[in-house]
Length: 420
Image (cartoon, rainbow, N blue to C red; front, side):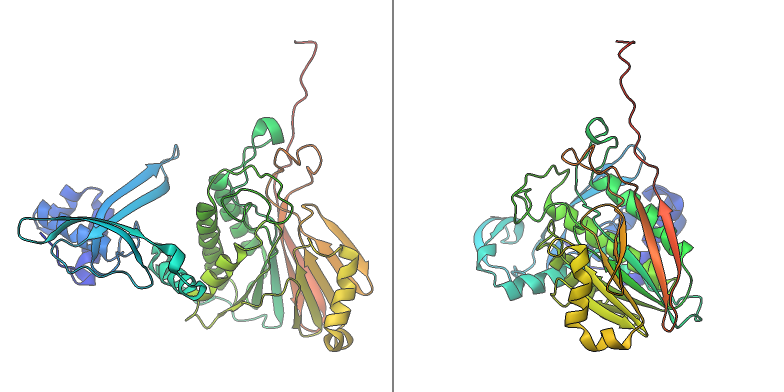
């Protein structure tokens, strides 16, 4: 039997009843309908992507199986979704895909009961891959988040920079090796907590510049090696899960900024760990906020990026291709006109995982700390303080204030030989 989609209002009514009453039986009684009718309404809501648990099913498909892994804290850690063709529906190949192999189970009356399709992705052009990525982003449940107007419209001369460096999503560290456990789930929880705190500590209103300074993910592909030097990486998850988590974190962070500031400008620069995967973050953010006039995503490919805010000239770079003392010269060479017209110059980078600040040729060059702990390779060498900061600039008067959120330092205990 094929369930016809309900109108969105009726489907949402069922979802809200289930959330309010906690069980399908209680929700069905509250709505005055049978349990089977209620189950059909929830199934239709799932198919339309209205429950927030699964993406909307592609046209001609229906939800077959939903599996959720629950963590010790009772929260959903991961979700697995399987779709199948609607029974009796005419088969339509999703746009941009090519059939490699198909196995079909047909019922006695000729309708499709089950189907297994192997898609041949190798025939896709780069353009088709980009388009499919955009279509995928549109179906994700968190695309239903809305941008609420900022509550404060003053401070239009202020620009608050949120430098986000070296999160290394999917890095694996253990307490025995590094003094602290770290994996993809812990990284997400840590960033969600600390990034929300730094926004609340920053001045309200004005414009936000969210600067992703590279190494957002720990690995660039499933080889689990740095792309250029080939160093073996200890990872806690696949590149797919790392990129997906990175996109989700970045989208949520943008919505939080929109609730605090009038406008948000986003710039993603590549690092030596995410040499290619940064593209996914950049394009996903551009696609997600394509209809939001208060968000601008800069998609230029340059490793070194410069922007101007009144009398302030700002540069961004990961730090893997240029020494800090060379960054001032790069700014003067590439932005000669803006260099001559500005009073205050700031160049931000990451890569080194600890704070360094120096004034070079009239430019304040500053290396950002990370909130990620060291992995086994760096343990004992770079246990520098960890923090997130924001820097607020005035168009005419330069830097006005800073906010910071600090993490407790890693402390290890020496083994007592006397007790051995």
